[in-house]
Image (cartoon, rainbow, N blue to C red; front, side, top):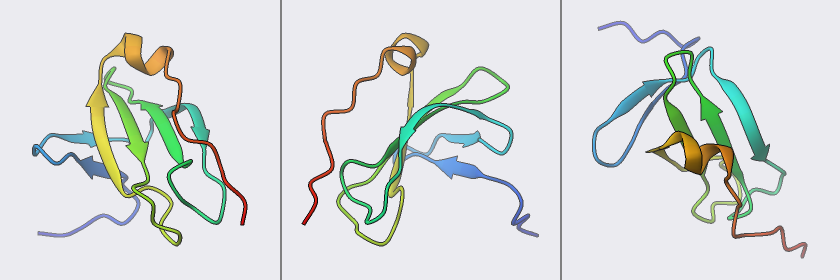
Length: 85
């Protein structure tokens, strides 16, 4: 199987996948150094909504993904703020 490095395909912990290659970013906060304040909300061309999040990793922008419903995506309020050292 060949992996296309130009594709942005995510997999959720429960095994769902979504192709975000041509997705629209609805909102995000991806500031280095990374951490819990980092997130992105995506809408795929197929109408799949995905939340990318960071579990606290300083060197990785997004560490996990979950598929969410449209209302949650459009009204998303992130619970973490950046804490500068």
